Length: 224
Ligand code: SF4
Image (cartoon, rainbow, N blue to C red; front, top):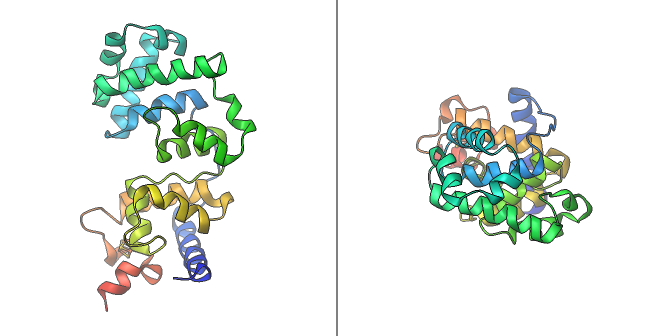
């Protein structure tokens, strides 16, 4: 598919999806370091357990310095509800330690002065931070133009034909950033996730009830 065809498809999808779900305006979800910890906790779990683990951690250790310096077993215990606690606890402490060593404090303020590519490279240099996590921190906490691709975004955009049929989740970040205008990253990310949760389910997409039929490769292929 040519770039201009993809751009037309994006415009069609964006128009339809904004009519139904609205166009969410950016708001900061969490401060940057909180977002970093929250995204580490979110790996392989749902939002409810991620938030419960985050809240327990904050209750037991009111500052990130206290989390960094805590007994590792106590941090693991605090985040247990999020699953993979033996991995996530040490990862969180290592990330906080890394910020301290490189920035002299637990802060991500320096990212604001970097180009988006520099900021992504810096974040993905932290153990346990991949392209999706980096993009979430940049977009949601700092309002920088990065497009996070989670399982919903990957599945729905692939079915629509906005990315290639065989495009990996990692590669999808680049493909979507090339066709979605940066000012739409926040809204489109949230709109596609909503669509993935409510209509374009993983096992059986509810195509019969879907307003994106006219723009969807999967649907067009299925009706021949
Ligand atoms: S038409 Fe079907 S596959 Fe396409 S976006 Fe809608 S639910 Fe998903």
